[in-house]
Length: 291
Image (cartoon, helix red, strand yellow):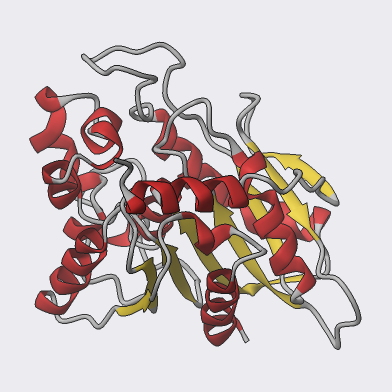
């Protein structure tokens, strides 16, 4: 007997990945590695002035086979809604399994974080040259799944542990973060086996868990003082709602209110599927912070 939840998830994934990739209007490198690149999408249609900038960080469990191409239809949807969009690529895990995993390992330490920090720091200059229709003073960061973790982390660099090479001296100039089904609490994610132990792999394996988690786990990097909303499918079996709920609870304990929008009747992938109603919910959450 098949599991209805698994069948729904497979159908949602098939719909989200059925859209062909959308080519960017411009691209720019923020480093020498081939993965250190940002694709830019100009806002479509008439605009009375510079458009808010949405920085997109794709998901895929921080694993090498999943790159930014799968989220380009989502980036295009945002551009069609009047946003300027920066779709960031970053170095991900090895294509070969190790650390006892059964598939490609998740993430690289420290390269994944090196890249996100470098991309965010370089974006104002890159935008000025490649996307003059964007207003970087009105920047919202969004990310899906593992990219949701990176989006939350990018907004929390000023509260990283002292001595961290990624720490900022002051909060980043962001309007806010909209994290989509993020892997936002590593302890809960590991307890639930999210993405086959990807959180532990991202940190380099169990031997590095205690030392590195305070520099990477969004639930450990609170409060940020940055407006934050989490959008989560109530029926998500890839990153279950318990992960987002635990992050929101940790924020509240730290004295910070995090918005949590639970979308009824959907799972993990409709949040980035332009054909799904849930994707319109995401766009509206971004608009509330950006405009």
